[in-house]
Length: 120
Image 1 (cartoon, rainbow, N blue to C red):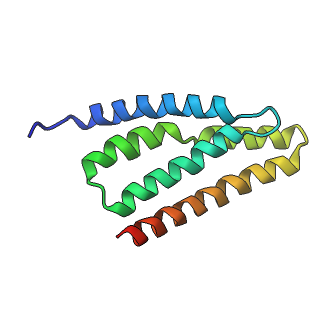
Image 2 (image 1 turned 30 degrees about the vertical axis):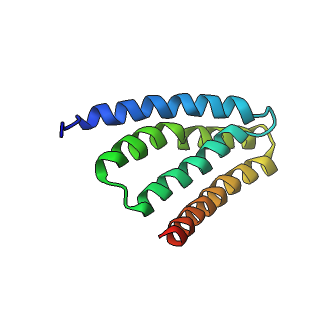
């Protein structure tokens, strides 16, 4: 079996994740709330958690986890959007955004674990 360079796996996965992030964000984002970022963070957390709990091998995790999920999810956009909401005086949405990202990601991870446990 041919060995694939880890950088190629991460790069390929990163390209896929970035494109998926753009499509998802465009489909669900709104002016009043960064729903696109919330959506990709929760979905990406579920996907990475599911793959990890399944026991996916390290090569596939480079492609899927580091590559796809790494570029699909975004802590930096989440942080900037939350601060911008706060600075513009929309403090309730800022707190809601922070809480929704943290709670949503935590729930997604729990659901991924439970699903793997049920399937296993």
